[in-house]
Amino acid sequence: MLRHMARPDKQIILPPVIVVESFHMGGMYCAPEKKEIMLQGKHYSLVKGLIVLVCIPGGDLDASLAHEYRHHWQIMNGWKFDGREYNNPNQSYKQNIIRYFLSSRSEMDAHLFSLPYIRKDYPLQWQE
Image (cartoon, rainbow, N blue to C red; front, side, top):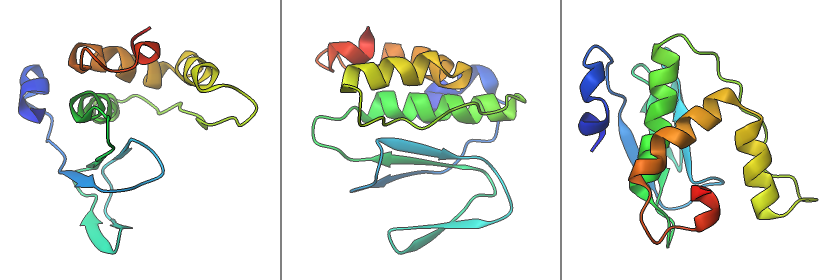
């Protein structure tokens, strides 16, 4: 799947992808750097970057992979990540999603890139 998404960008080195059982978010991208990260008791090299996907019941791994790969593409093309904190406990889930994506060029771009990969039965508010 990752090779399919990256087909037009053959010059970009593909990062490893791991799937974990639990985490504090649906996915995560770590930019390439000469260090390691420890997740759930295991060390992972970040030399090529790293995409972490979370196996959540009812989640959408394909869309999460597309979203996190797009962050890799952004970094490889010189974008500066402008993401912000996702969860505001004083707002509804839908309000948090809207604020999150509208306040960040890189998050909105990654979200739009992932839309073709979202399952048909995935929550409408993510597609809106």
